[in-house]
Length: 413
Image (cartoon, rainbow, N blue to C red; front, side, top):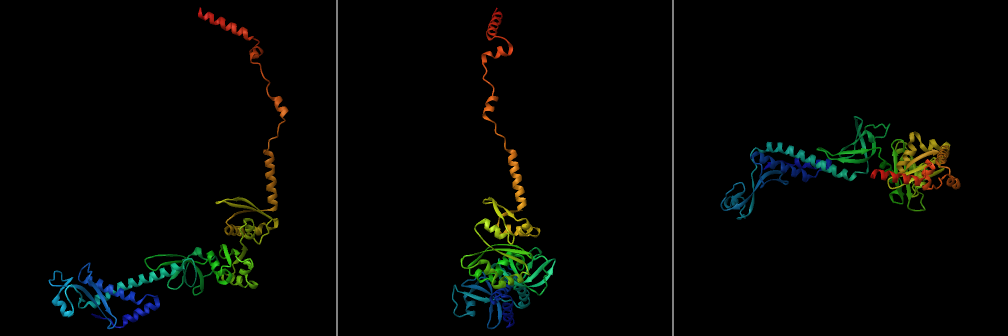
């Protein structure tokens, strides 16, 4: 047996506290390492009856072979005679199994090297599995982390047992990520790697807004107010469509809160990003009007309402066109994402001009109707077929028949 002492148990307890790896996993890894070292020592690939046993009371560990008690030994590695077995235990009988210690002398150094490699590998596997299990459950949720460093425009955020990656495309434009600052991120994906799993997080995802509203608005958490749709351009503006399942509760007012306290907390968390809260409606016309707020709308015409095509023409006052479209088309773009409708916006003057042009083209394409009497007069009169030859050539039809008969008689002669 190899004397280990209490140092191993102290180390296992420390690893369990720091990394969450259980004591049993480490002890099992150590026993497997000793078995692997023993196989290497005896130059055997397989040794099914070999195991390592750790005595936690004495702090000793050794390698043992399990052998079958027989009368005549044919395989020394698998069998033991009854006489030899009696030396180990007086109660042993034939067909019993006994454990024989086979720990080689000076095995401590070899075992230590093998144990180091195996334990290190097992600890990494256990840690990887713990991180994978934890963050698979957190996928699609909001979590809080601490910014560690910035490398190649990627931000590394510590979110517990691992450092997550915040890619450049998932960052808020213009945001400065200072190491040491706390940050709320959305867990996008968890990828398995040879080492620790790679956790991808986002600071610009629309679901961050949903999570923040669920934290700040009790009516949303209780299911009274429902978030139907979110459209976000991180760092600039967000549109949120909400619906109340209780007619006595105003969905927009619940999200804003008393004197705007709830919405202000969320806006501060999002670094003063503008948030438009609109009422969701089953009526597409009303929903589109609400989504284009704060612009005033004159009319909404549904051009196509099919499974794969939803198009609408919106007419606004002349002085509201720029507000309805927004800077660089942001307002109408967010309204499109929010509602799922393709929205074409025209001001009142443009709509009137387009309608006038359409009518003019329609009038040009119309053909004038002709008078029935005039049309009948233009038709050709009936012609007497018997007089056609006589009228056109001045030859009587009977003369032509007589002449043809004379020609036939000449041919016969």
